[in-house]
Image (cartoon, rainbow, N blue to C red):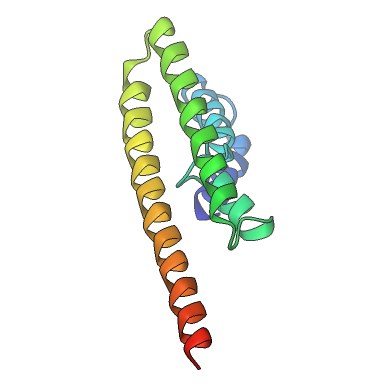
Length: 128
C-alpha cells in the first residue's frame, strides 16, 4: 500500500501547482500507476489486497487461479502495448510474468509439502 499512498500524496501535492503541462503529465502518470498497482497480479498491491482481505489465505488452488489470471492480464497488456508502440511496458510485463511463474512453482512446492505432511500424519496416526 506504500506505493499507492505515495502516488496519492504526489497527486495531492502537485494539484496545488497545476499550472504546468509537465505537472499535469506527472499527475496523470501517477493515476495510471495507481490503476496498474491495483491489478490483481502478483506482486502488485491488488494481488496482496485480495490475498490479505479475501479468501486467499490458505487456499493454494485459488491463489493459482489468480496467478494464471494475472498472467493472462499481463499478456493482454503486452499485446496492446506492443500494438501502441510502448515497448518499455513490455519489459515490465515480462518481468512480472517471470515473478508469477516463480510464485506458481513455490505454490507447487507448498502443495507437495502439505500433501506429504498430511500423509505422514495419517500414517503416524494409523500406526498408533
